[in-house]
Length: 276
Image (cartoon, rainbow, N blue to C red; front, side):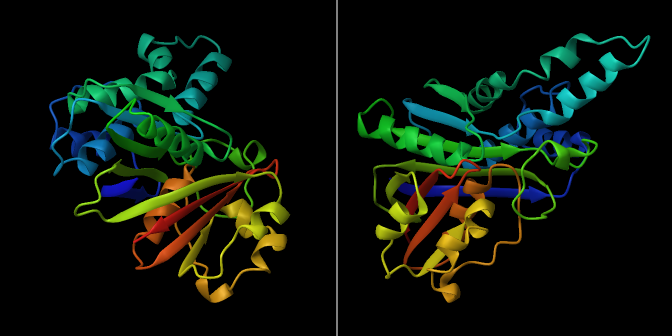
């Protein structure tokens, strides 16, 4: 799979009205009452494809760890308070499944669209599915994004979310546009593999990678990190829910053959090889 366009939006927790203003400047789609999650997704997708002539059989994949978490939290707060009325849009905005429809609508795309989530490996699993559907000609192009809101507005969110590192949660919308055409590409994803143990993973790691990126759980796995060349590991400072999308974009900044290692809390591993 060859990468032809990318976009990265990483911010500390901004108010939804600020994103609505940015979206209004580039699109006529009406998301005035929609969730920040939907607006982040549409904004990122539009910016990732602004120089692309979209083909009809485009597959749109939105990966997310938390979905419209801030609207879910606000709805629960409203329900728990006496004499508060829940408004119709409060219910509509906690539905995460409509996000890919809005992206498709904004792009006037006619192909398949979907939202996927898989605990702490949402982007990685989504990319794996997209690769398979590209290989069997189910789609001709891939637009895939990792989209998540900052958790900072959710009180005591650390109690409910597993973090390997004490990193600040940010708003994020990171996108890749890919297909099988090698001409004028920014890079190539050459291989995606799953492993059930760190021992199995380490047997398959080559010594020739120029750079290595790890998600927060892999970075805290001493069985892996101690076996790697520390000079090749990218110091990743930015963080948001769909971390895999961000780490692939990090690797695209370097020339060479690279590796991304992702791990979840159940010790499942995915590696993505990337050539730039």
